[in-house]
Length: 368
Image 1 (cartoon, rainbow, N blue to C red):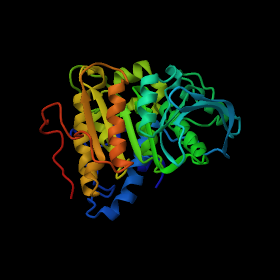
Image 2: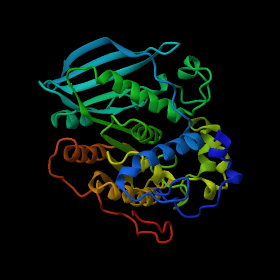
Image 3: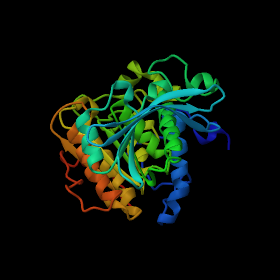
């Protein structure tokens, strides 16, 4: 089957007003056992990357890190700054800042690509490290610029045509490559997070790398945890995001402007790609552009896949008052969820409380 037959253009795709059924195979039959999910997941991943984000760049030959500085900071925190070298056909570098408690043993690590927005706030570092977490912040814009300019990874792989979200997700994976070589890192307790466009990236990173045990997008909205088919309160649409940031996505995504019913998936499918690994969406109720109501929709729909895989407790959603930001309160919710799912502690709060009425008619299917 050629690519056009497998992935027809939008005009040749069926209209699907409901959220697409994640249990439906390409042949029109539904899967009936959890053992069938792995193969179907690969089909969904191929569709999502083809139509929305573009494939990730090829794996590099390797990664290595050069220590720029290391110091014992206030509170017994070890602060190490690296230059992470990615051995691509044209070498790439990114700044990587690791902050960890000065203690023996292997630590859970949370990776965040938003270092381009400034140093992590001291209150967040203190909250995470006192609980025994290491934080690894890197600058995703040194992997690929947040512009239409084709530098960074695009120079290294001139034929690469994925959008920035895919390129940045690839950056998360390269940071993880390095972290797994470090003696203080617990290889099965790796989490990723990010805010806004960084949250979109974190979700895609978690969907495409099974080494990630916990994925936690914050206020990620359109192209992230939000819903395309359900737009509430004037939230961002495909047309809006592609008018402002077309380079975040693959060029093929533009064919769904005004034709969202032809999109063969919605963002509940991207969330389902993380299953059965842990997934938490953190949302702000006044962040209407990011569609928190629609994020609840995709949460409930993706939860059907988690239920099918007997992992329903591993998907969570959490709302706070306030607007578009990655606050200490968001981080505390993430750390509580990580304590539960990475460290096995009893849950410190509920992660299944809904903030909006459950919308009828958005999908009629349920887990088999």
